Length: 160
Image: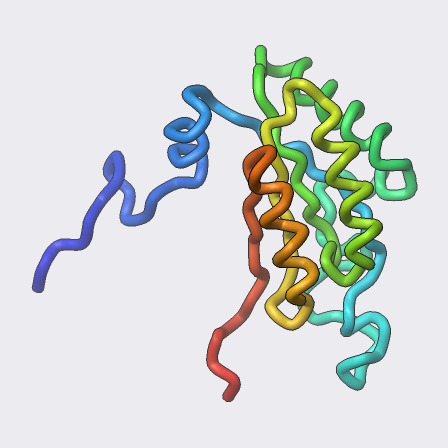
């Protein structure tokens, strides 16, 4: 059996290493919540609950969920800066299904993230059934301006 590739002794390539390679230094994620729901919670899949997220949509800072995006970014940045001398951040649209929102709303959220000089990009948490051509167009547009990453929450890519 052939040995698998290892990165710094690990059997996988850590995203932190990727960020360091791309940005030249450690980059910190700022988790934010802009969506309060998903197709499961809306009953679109025959249920009104979700098996994958907790009540807060698996948010990193549930206490900030009801705050606006600017306050969430500033509070999360402040929490990181109290611990380390961070120079670059990614705004991580983490909780629930971010792309379940309208594309126009996402554009506004991305504009807010891009307005911070130390924010070098966004990471968008979503699921495969909440991706549209209009969303791809938006992501491509912003990828011309800064770093854009999509993080899929999936249990399996097999329809069975």
